[in-house]
Length: 328
Image 1 (cartoon, helix red, strand yellow):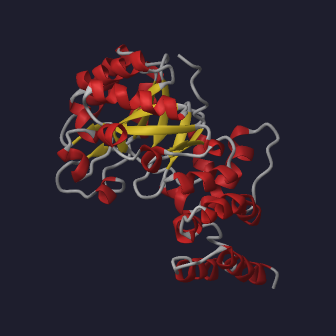
Image 2 (cartoon, helix red, strand yellow):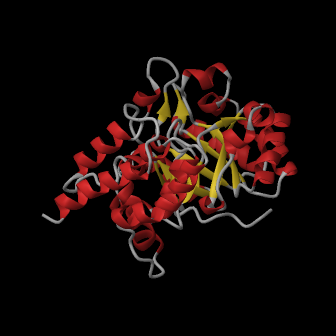
Image 3 (cartoon, one colour):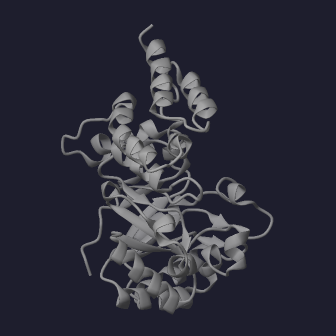
C-alpha cells in the first residue's frame, strides 16, 4: 500500500458543494489541505458518466474520492476506477444520515453493520494500492456511543483500515434532517479523543463543529488531523491561512485578491470549454466575508454570473467593487 497522506487539515465532502470547480478553487488557497469529492455511489461510478461524476484536474491533488455503498464487489470495482482515475485515496461513507442514503442502506446506517464495512474494506484493499479509509459518526439513534464507536472501529480496523475520520456526533436517522444532524446532536470530542488514545496504531481525524483555525490548532494537539466543512466553504479565505498556520514550513498566507488571480486561468479554461461562469463563481461567494465590499462581491456574482454568456468580465466587475471599498 502507498504511504498514507498528510491528514493535518481536510475539507469535508459536501453534497452539491465540493465538486471539481470548488476543489480547484480551494486548491489555489491551500496547497496542503486534503480535498474530498462529494459522495458518489459505487453504482454511479461503475455504470455512470465517469468523467462527469468523478473527473478532476491534476492541480487538485491530493484528493480523496468518497464512495457510498455496501456491497464489497461493487465497492472494490469502484475503488479500481478511482485508482485508475488517479485519486490519492478512496473513502467509505459511514456517516451520512440523509433519507436518500438510508434508502440505499449505506452511509450512517452502516454504523450498525461493521462486518459489512469490514468486508468492503478488505475487498477494496485487495483491489487497489491507494489507501482505503472510513468516515463515520460516533453512533446512530439510541445506540450507546462508546460501545458502538469502539466496536465499529475495531472490526473495521481488523480488515486493514488504518485511518478513520470521525464526526463527533450521533446521527439520528429518524426525526432530524441532514442539516439538523449537523447541529443538534451534541458533540463528544472527549469520546473521539479516547478512541485516539486507546487505539494508538490508528490515525484518527476529528470532524464536526470546528469553525476556526484556532480551534483546529488546538485539536491538532490531540488528533492526527482535523476536517472542516461549512466553515471552510462559506468562508474560504480561511483556507488561505491553512498552509502558513497549520503546516508551517515557511508557507505564505494566500490573500483573497491573490486567490482570485490564481483561480482565473482555471476559470477561463473552463469557460472556453462551455462551463457556465456561475458553476465556478458560486463557490467563491464567501471569499470576502467580513471585508468591505463583501456584499457587492456576492451580489455581482449572484446576479450576473448565471446570465447566459457571462464571462470573466463579471468576475472583474465584482473584484473592482471590492477593491473600491477596500481602497476607500
